[in-house]
Length: 180
Image (cartoon, rainbow, N blue to C red):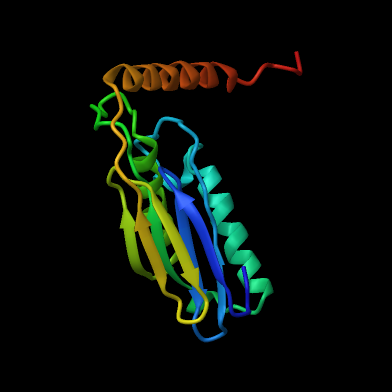
C-alpha cells in the first residue's frame, strides 16, 4: 500500500494479484495470494468456502491498509491479474479445479460481492505474468512469460495429491466430543 508516487511489482503464475486504487485520494494497494487446494462447495459461493479464506484475508488486508492511508472504500477500483494454469485442463466433475481457475473464480466473485468495480483484468491462460502497478496513473504493465509444458504424469500426481489431502482434511474437521 502507498499514498506516495511509486511502482509496485510482482511475478504471478497461478496466484492472483489485485491492484486496487482510489483515484480521488491517490492511494494504491496490491496483494498476491494463492488459494488452498480445497474442494469447492457447490452450495456456497467460492469466496465463502474454506479455499476462499486465503483470498478473503489477502483482500481485506489490502483494503484495510488502503483505508488506513486515507482511501475511501466507495472509490476503490480493481485491476486483477494471474490465475494461469500450467497444466492441461481437467475433468472437474469430482470438484477438482486447477489452482489458477479457482483463484480466478474467487477474485471475480469477491469483487462482485464487495461491490468493487473491476476496471481491467488479465486472468487464466498458460503463461505467467510480471506486473508493474504505477501510482502515477494507476496503470498496470503486464509482461507474460514463455509457456511451460507439463507431462500428463505430473498432472495425475498433482490431482491425486489434491484428492488425498482434501480427504484427510475432511476427516480431520470432524469435531471430537470433548465434553464427554
